[in-house]
Length: 169
Image (tube, rainbow, N blue to C red; front, side, top):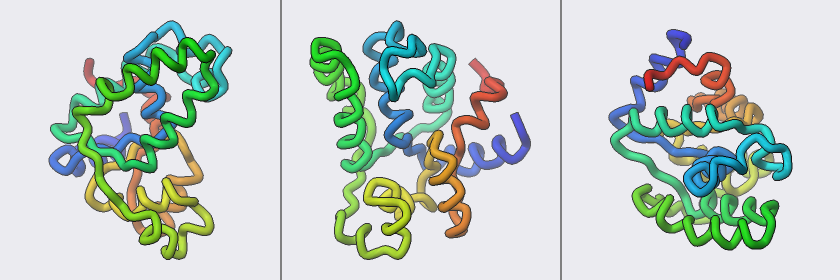
């Protein structure tokens, strides 16, 4: 793993981790049925394999605190619409159990909507930008990482971790 990634993770370990929506979907579905990962049937999951889920779990374990927002959880719930109805229903039954241990930060939508970056990022990602200095945002959205960097904020691009898979097991 690069020195920059190690340094970034080390700086935020005491603060906490916030997993963006696509990766939170991976976290949910992986905890439900790992066979759904990487089989190409489900649009939002087709890019992930079992090793990605395992890497995400290892990353999460490094942090004593994990947080999310209602915006991210809403997106995760909506992203399950890509799953077959029975699978979606079973997966959503697991939703509470999967995310109950993660603290939920409330960021008023109108507070996010009045920010200048809202017109580029949208609601969920703008809300993330408001807590980015406090928590390490982990995402596979390169566009989000680039915009946060332009705003002087940091985020972890999960794809950079995927390339190395060097987090300790």
